[in-house]
Amino acid sequence: MPVSRLRIFADDHPDEPLLVADTPDAIARGLQAIGVAFEQWQATQPVKPGDTPEAIMDAYRADIDRLVAERGFRTVDVVSIAPDNPNREAMRGKFLDEHFHKEDEVRFFVAGSGLFTLHVDNRVYEVRCEAGDLIAVPDGMPHWFDMGPEPSFVAIRFFTEPEGWVGHFTGTDIARKFPRYEKGQAR
Image (cartoon, rainbow, N blue to C red; front, top):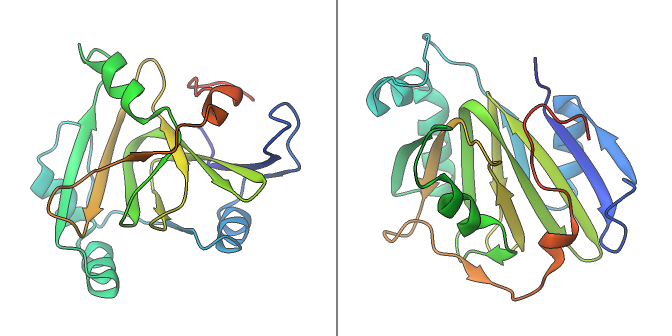
């Protein structure tokens, strides 16, 4: 079973992590130091890819309602991406360069996985999110996201702005210097 993981690098050394954490508590502590929230949620009823967005959100209703009340989100939705999606390359490419948002980027992985990479000062925080993980990246924090060449995930997304996802790209090439996400990869 895949395990969530945090690796921290110097931003000029993508080949050698300074720290590796693979327990939820250690990941949460490592990310809390830079203002990023990391939680794990449990469904109150069984869910699987292909379930309706309503059924998926009902399974996590208490956590969703708590987060909406705490952070003032106005929109919550479910996104699902399968490995055979004909637009997968374009979808992946949309998130691969360093960008930031003018609202928190909050994602909960219902199924599947993805790689959030955060760039703070002279450090790069690579977070492999798996099913059951929630990550909350603060507004203005430079980051990129990789869903891999054969994306497979279901995620609950939270927004405060009516436009939804709006990325502001930094124009740097740092994201190209760090490893891409390949499912099952031991790196």
